[in-house]
Amino acid sequence: MTNFFNSTQPLRFDPEGEGLCFRHYNPDEVLMGKRMEDHLRFAVAYWHSFAWPGGDPFGDQTFDRPWFGGTINHAKRKADVAFDMFDILRVPYFCWHDADIRPEGKTFAKSQYNFEQIIEYFQFKMESGNTKLLWGTANMFSHRRFMSGAATNPDPDVFAWSAASVKLCLDATHKLNGENYVLWGGREGYETLLNTDLKRERQQMGRFLQMVVEYKHKIGFAGAILVEPKPQEPSKHQYDYDVATVYGFLKEFGLEHEVQMNIEQGHAILAGHSFEHELALAASLGILGSIDMNRNDYQSGWDTDQFPNNVPEVALAYYEVLRAGGFNKGGTNFDAKLRRQSLDPLDLIAAHAGAMDVCARGFKAAAELLSDGTLESMRASRYAGWETCAAKQMLQGDLESAAARVEVENIDPMPRSGQQEILENLVNRFV
Ligand code: XUL
Ligand code: CO
Image 1: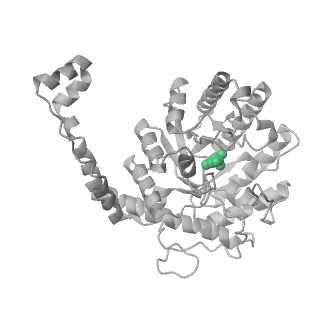
Image 2: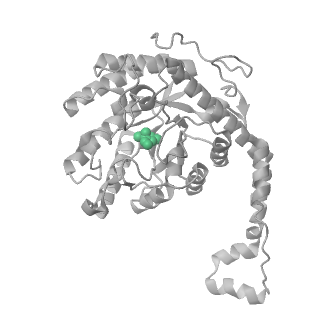
Image 3: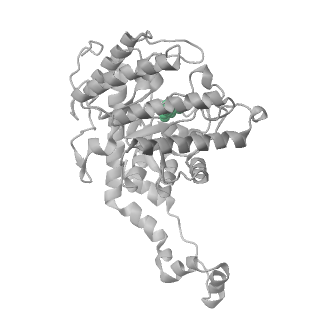
């Protein structure tokens, strides 16, 4: 135990409590036959909470953490504080990038040596603790060697470096019994089309993803490989633009049954969609894996990665997750960071505890809405015509036989209300 948080006493569930406690998140409460902890599967993002120094484009580091320093001892101290926080929050999972957890070495071998020491340290801490690994990933966007992409780089040596990075991180994720492995391609895109061979870059990226999947099978990693879509930022355009685009990409490279999605709230908004749209689409395509829960500032138009605090939005998102049958290997990763003025250890705890409560409220509302059944029965009745034999047969037939029905059956379709306001009022009763 470190003394960063003063106490590592786990937060209790107390709806009427004063100070720091959960007012809505009760891990043991059973909803739809499952404990809330097992539904929501919360994870802490190591990068935002322990590695981010509090900078912005106009100012440097604001956080002064005792583990900032770049030695292996600093990295272990960081791990100690992280595991203290996992205990306080009672989160079942965490997530990392290689670059968050180990000091960068002068060579790949030195970075690997540092990384493996921390993975061993994690293993030791995980054996005696309650927090598991939701996913690992390789940071292939921060270091300048990746400035022109990782797998899509014009330099094949960077492709090889990226292969070595993913292999190392996938091996470590496997060793720690991680449930998923994520690829987010922040630099897999372009700054200008003028210097970009788009066809070649997409092919490199497709082959890279096939290699990752081949390797996953070779080592017997049972977790899911997840791609995280984002339309832009840091690149002007990113190839993994949104769920629909990634699905087309997966089909092109024969990976639609191998790879699923890690969908982030803020990325959905940047792509011009709602979070629930991206979730519903992924679910309908059978590729809904996991979620990165956060929110953007709706005025600033970029990825501010704030902790969620909008219950109705969160409820509609979890509604789609529940409608799809809930998480399997996936979970709710808080890909969210403190504001840079939130300096205190207490801010870190409050941010997560508050977000867990927001998610719990949203989740409970979603579970009640689904159990109530009205929304689903109204949706089903809108499509009831398609349940008739004639309608089903029409889809088996050709254009001419469908067209012939108009005359033969004397068809004259009557428009029906979409009932949007009635449905919105219904949702409002639950959120
Ligand atoms: C960046 C982002 C990443 C990924 C993991 O916007 O969301 O943190 O989640 O690389
Ligand atoms: Co993310």
